[in-house]
Image (cartoon, rainbow, N blue to C red; front, top):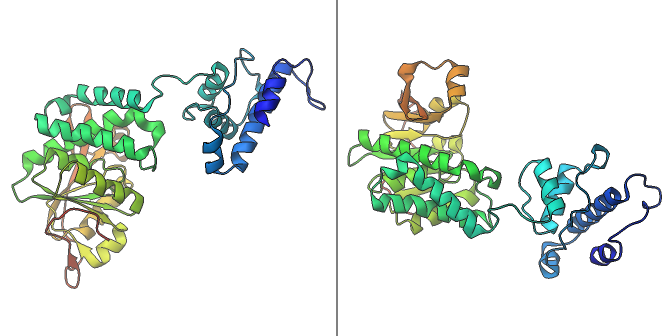
Length: 331
C-alpha cells in the first residue's frame, strides 16, 4: 500500500483533508508515518520478504519545526528505507531527505575503517605481530557477532578504537607486573573490553571474565575460541551470587564501565581468594569528581587507571575455588 500510494502521489497539489501546511511537508510526514506504522505491525519475516521500501526523494530542503517527526518515527523510517538508523535526530532527518546512507555504510567498509584506526593506536603498535593479529581478530569477531546479537552499542562504534587501545594499554601494564603463574579476574566483562584484549596481549595468563548476561558470555566464549585463547574463561554469573559460592585466586582484578568506582573494590574483595591489585580505567572527569589522589593513579599517555590493593573480604570455607583455567563459558 505504501509503494502504490507513494508512486501515485509524488507531486501533491494540496494537503490531505483536515491537515494544514506545506503540501510537500505533509507528503513527507504521511509517508514516514505510514512506513512507521507498517513496520511496527509487520513481522520481521514479512519485512524480509517484502524487501526495503523505496527511499525518500529530497521532496523539500528542510523540515519545519511544526512538521518534525519524533526520534522513534525517524528511526523506523530509516530502517524501512534501508538506511542506517543510528545518530542524532537531525542526522536521521537529513539522511531520509537525501535518500542515501552516509559512508561508511557497508559492513566491510565499517570494519576496514575501524581496523585501520585501531592499528594507528600507539598501544597496538607496541604489540608483536601475533598479539596484534589477535587484537584485530577480536574487532572482527565483535563486529560480526554484533550484527545479529547486540553486545556492544552500534552507536558507539566510533569510540571502539579508543576502548581497544585503553584495554591493550592495561594488558601491557599487567604484563609488566605479572609472573608466569599470574591470573586476572575481570568484573562485568560485557563485550570483552578489557578481558578478551587482556588475554590477547597475555595469552599465557589465566583470564576469568565474569559477566551476568548469557548472550555476552556466549560471544566471549566464541571469540576466545576463535582467537585460540585456551586460558580465557568466561563465567556466566551475577557478581554477588558468584561471590557467595565461589572465588578466584586472581593476582589482578579489572573492571571497565562496571559500577561506580566506590563500589568496585568491595565487590572485588568479595570475589578474590588472595591479595590482588585492582585496576580500573577512569576518565579525567572521574579523577576530578571523586578527588582521586595522584598516588592512586597510573597514567599511560591519555589513559588513566585507578589502582588499589584488595584482600579477601569473605571466608573461603565452603566456597568453590574457580581456578585451574580451561576454555568455554561456565555457569
